[in-house]
Image (cartoon, rainbow, N blue to C red):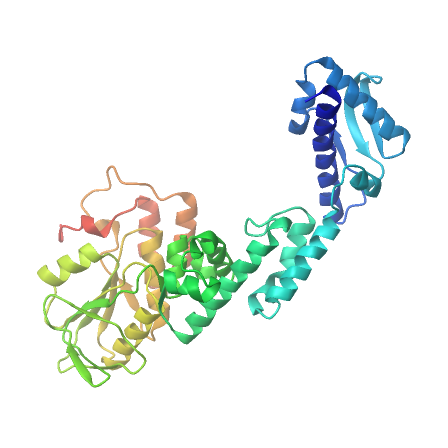
Amino acid sequence: MNDPAKSEQILIEILTKLLLKQEQLLGSGSNKQADIGTRESVFKPYAKSQPLGIVKYINILIQKYEKEGILKASWHTENISLKRIYLQDYERLCELIKHTPILKKLSIALQYLDYKVLDIPLYSMLRDAIRANWLEHKSFHKCTVDQYETLAKGFQGAHIALSLYQKKEAIDYRHFSIKAFKDSKKLSSYKALIANLLKSQYSELEGFGIDEVFRFFGITPIEQPILLSGSLNFTQHGSILDASFPPAVGLFPTEELLVSTQIAITSVITIENQASFMRYVKEEKQPTEIVLYTSGIPTPKFIELFQKVSNTLESETNFLHWGDIDLGGFRIWNILNKSIEREVKPHRMSPDDYPSSQHLKDLNESEKTQLETLSNPSIAKLIQRITSVGKKYEQEMWKGKQ
């Protein structure tokens, strides 16, 4: 590349950055004119350019634009060593370097989104926030103003997830992808965006991973039966399933599912992890206990079954949750506790239930703060104990009462 062409390319990059700064000022409501100094990173190619003829040619162009009233420059050494560039005429500079003004980009992007997803309530709720972010050259859930088509796909996916959640319909990733994008493999391209859009409307999902968010809405890699064990009978479509069959049974519940029992149940225990669930039902479960495996974050189908079990059993029955002693474990407890009209008590979820905290991962300050927000009077002392110890315990560490 010859010196004039390389000089123009370097200068266009510098002036583009100047225009972006001006557009950020406009977006924030400022009347200031943008400026840019040679110490900013965009000037590195200018400062390191060899031969010096490139710098000289750039300086000549800046002087030319200064005379035309487009820019103003300050110099360490007049016309030789540049110090700062000040924008004087935004519109003319846009035309000069063929830069599309942000307002034009914003208009194109919003027109497209309005055409594609205006009937989606979530988009209508967030439209002003999208506009505000893009006006200041900020991304919206990692989508820039030029990625409006991607954002539209995200809203389409999030809308279908919310619709399925309201209907309590479970679905696997491939069929969800077909439903949202007419392609069984497309979900991977928009998965993080959909999860972030959904999290923006559900504060309890803060900190959840992508797959955990999808699971909360009943969208899983492959739909799995709910594993449980205990003296319950389930009647569905004319068939009866006895959940006391050892060590456990799997169930795909429907709205028509009926739950019954012939004995007094003393406790219902939900367990977060499958290994601990299987060990418990084989080695510890008592005849009057019901044990359910949540498979991590409980799905809407799990919650529906959990509610039916709660409504069937006597008020004296204890409801317990055994999970990891970490933020995830207590988030699961919180979802379960809010889902039924009786208290779910943490079970084996105190540091005092485990022999040692050596070599365990620490809870960070953010996790401690979020644990405290999940606290209520019934578990306040437990949360205080957990945050004071400051360690994470996996439930598989359980070795029985010490």
